[in-house]
Image (cartoon, rainbow, N blue to C red; front, side, top):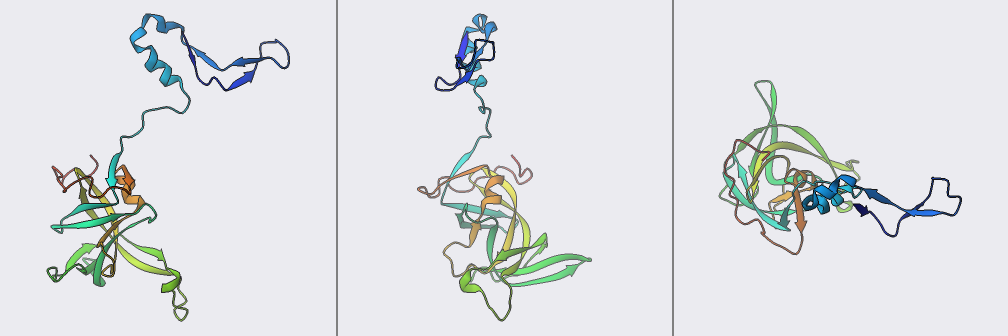
Length: 210
């Protein structure tokens, strides 16, 4: 049995038939005659660059996200053009707890979230300023934002992601999910859809990778 890889791609023969001689690029699978039901599948495996891709989940431009540990469900914007995830917060204060760096903040969402939240500080993220936000007196082209780790549920998928804290009260969506977090969700974003995953319904809090 012969599987033709590309009928338009040919190569020069190296078997001594002389210059200008060409032969089709073919893969011969002699043993497949006795495995006829699997022959088409084997031909597909012979195609260069074809393999088993990780199954992706299609999400819309906006999705509902449940923030585990904060007992909070918000509407999120999924933005492949942004690198990191951002949660709307105010009165952000860094402090030490048992010698470790922590951060205290209030959710900048609505009046119902007036209690302080404390979380371990994962790191400090430097976010490039927009041209309109640049202050020549400060001379800084970036803003430093504290980053925490949160378990986030979208649809049926629960993942632990890094989220930086900044006041997003001027924006419609209090949570922005960028490309790094979207990779964790194995996400494909279709901007023509909204809330494609439905309400969050993760079965467990224990496993954030499955």
